[in-house]
Length: 344
Image 1 (cartoon, rainbow, N blue to C red):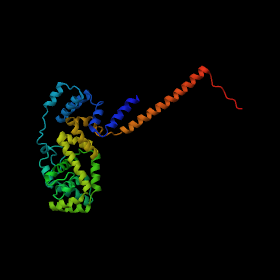
Image 2: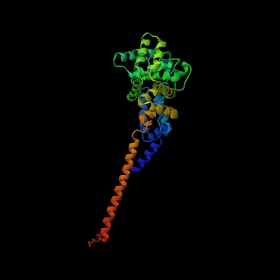
Image 3: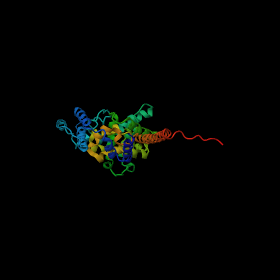
Image 4: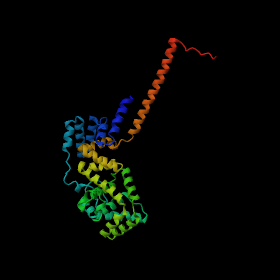
C-alpha cells in the first residue's frame, strides 16, 4: 500500500521544475475516456471549439478513443479566425466597461498610444488621491503601460528596445490583463499579488503629477510622471507578466490565455504555464481544465511524501516489535520461561 505512493511521489518531485512532465504524470489517473468524453460534450454545449479540439489532441496523445459522433460535433463548430485574434478580444477595453472576452477593436493601438492608460490613471489614480476605493491592479497596469510607451522608458523593458514596436508585446499584454481584470477572469491570488506589488512600489507624489497630466490630457507630461510612479523593478516584473500573457495568447488562443489567468496564482505560475504551452501546444487547455494548478506546481506533494515516509517507518517499527513479541512468545511455548536468576 505504501511503496506505490512513495514511488509516485518521488517521480513527481523529480518533475517539480518541468510542468510538461509533471502534468503528464498526473494525467495518467485523471484523463480517462469517460472524463474526456464528458469534457468534450461540455465544451461543445458552450460553443468552445478550441477547448473541445484540445481534448481531442489530449485523447490522441494518451492513446484514448473518441467516438466518431463527438468528433463530428467538434468539427461542426466554427473555427475562430487566427489572423484577427486581437480584433475580437476584450470588447469595450477602450471604454473600460468590458465584462467579457469579446472584442478588442482599437484597444491595442489605444494602449500603445497611451490613451486608455491615461483614462485609467485619471479614474483610478484620482480615486486614490481623494481617498476613495480604487482598483490597485488597474492602476498598476495602467501606470506600467504608460511608462513603457514613453520613448525615454526603453531601459525599463526586460529585453530593451528602441521603438514603440519593441514595446508592443509588453503593452499589449498589459492591455489584455486589464481586460481580464475587468471581466473577472483573473484568479483572486493573481489579483492580490499584482495589486500588492503595485501598491508597494507606488510613489504618490509622482502619481499626483500623472493624474494632473491625464486630466489635462497632456500625454507627454503624464508619461514622464508615470515613469516615476512605479519603481523600475515593479515595471519590469509587470511587463514580464504582460509578455507571458501575449505569448500564451499566441500559443493557445484568447480563451486559453483567459483560462491560464484564472488558474495561475502568481507570476511564477504564469511563466510555468507559458513553458507548458510551449511544450505541449494544443493539449494545454485540456490539461489545465483537468488538473488546474496541479499541472504547474507540486502543491502539497512534499507533505504527502513525508507522510508516506513516516507511515513506512512506523510500519517497519511496529512490524519489528510485533516480530520480537511473537518470537518471545513462541520461544516460551517451546522451551519454557527463562530461568530466574537468584541474587547472591
